[in-house]
Length: 235
Image 1 (cartoon, one colour):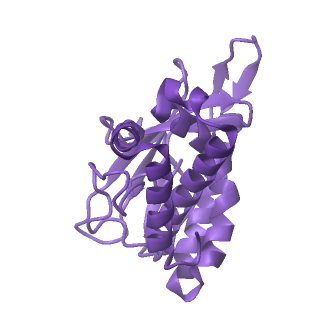
Image 2: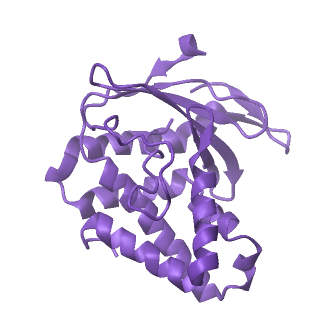
């Protein structure tokens, strides 16, 4: 597979490899979605309806997000948090099934929540997730993303090798499990170095918070952490 990789971007800035690629980051401490930072190929996948989805169908949302991440990395802290947030927001919500991840974490209890509370939780979870991206992608030090053809079995998995820009830093491989949703192809899980599911860890943390502080407590915690990450510019 390594020989099949191709380069789509030649990044220019983020210190992602000095403590930022942490494999067991917790969901509601400010590191939350840190591993889910870099995303993204060619091939075809058979769909249940019988038509074929090309690799570009599957990977386009991730590649677009990848390009936006590089843009905000290069912009860095010289550009306001809110401006970088606004760049990433539509790309993240398009590329990642945040609503599905949240609802799956809450489980059967989701159906019993009032519609207004469901909406508030979706909004808070989206803002928190986007703010976490912005917080971590704040500089560029020459990283490169090497992309591999997606797998064709079950839900396609898109793999990316994160090649550091600094000598001595470790490379990592992230795997993005894609699924066709009403919004198109979206990532429903991400693994680090083929073994650690960040989404599963986050979902377990959400369940734990729901048990201990309830839906209102989860909502308040998400808002609190978003404010902390953004310095109050995103609430």
